[in-house]
Length: 183
Length: 300
Image (cartoon, rainbow over the protein chains, first blue to last red):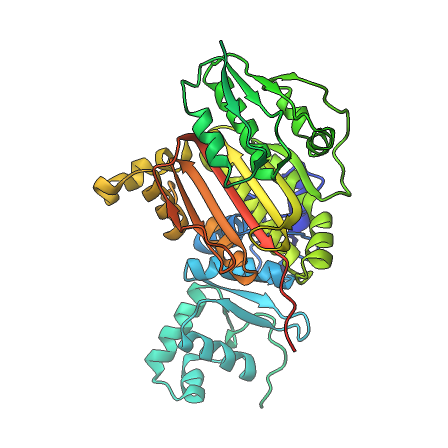
């Protein structure tokens, strides 16, 4: 199940303000708390955090909303940020890098998820491989990348822990993955 | 008899030192008169600094200071348009004719003098600034329209320093004007000032031991501005000033912060201020200034 949370709507419900800017730490804390409540209630496999109607996102608020959401997970849901403008994404990337974190962002043109923030080259390689080839087990990922199976297992476990990939019946998969590019 | 605190004729971040010296020349609880009669001009930094001084006297329980308004009619009108007198009337006994003008949204005053006490005030400031900032940054300063968001972000983070660290309220103002002497170009200036605890007291509990004998206003500013240290142990803290520096680096902007007896500056190539100045006259709280210059047309 996929849940979509409109951040601007939460912001308006949480903070009595005529503006739709995600600024200040108290605002960030309040919005994060509302998001966490929804994550806990819905227990969705995938949550889309939609920033489409949000104005400014400052560093402090990005830290409170995004970084702390990733640092203090309340469920196993994978989170994908969507509807972000370039400047909003820049603030979010800044805080992700500060914390050595990574998040998934939906590419507006392709519709697919991509990683932003700080991840090791191995995690990035595994993510791209899953995105290109579709769901895979540790063994098939090892085959595709030329890694040892235990290396592939370790990398996939880390991606799952960071909730950058989902574990399904068919294996590990990237959220919002389109059809595999190769058979 | 009242002690006279002189308002410099051209009151900006540099002549502020004359003002601070005059302000600190006697006890804060002295009966004082702020003499602005010779004033010809004041930057947003000067305007919020005067209010901060009045606020500090009020919070220290000093007698309500007198304030003689500028003799020049155009200066009085400009200060009225910035909203200065409306706030000054709550802190000072004003003497002289004060024009009754509303802040002018279409002038070079991007944000009239605005009090900042709580998170809601930062929301209002950021919401209010964006349309005007886009107009000035794009059309007058030649800065990419996308940079407006970064500008509002820098403003937001600067104001939040008051809410998070000052322990009292403060003031913000944003104006556009031509920096004739130092730069010869248009600039947008954000000035934020509070009469709170200042950087040294804010960081003392967590940083003083690390600096040892060096601890003081200068070391506290160095910790906050250069090392991005915050008084909070939360590892996510300290990103506000880091974010401001990043934005300013992109647009050759300048950041200076004065607190207590020291001033630190992130100095672009067009300015010659020393990166750190210590042993200044003491002044309450913290004063922050951000200057973003018009971009030079690219050659070719």
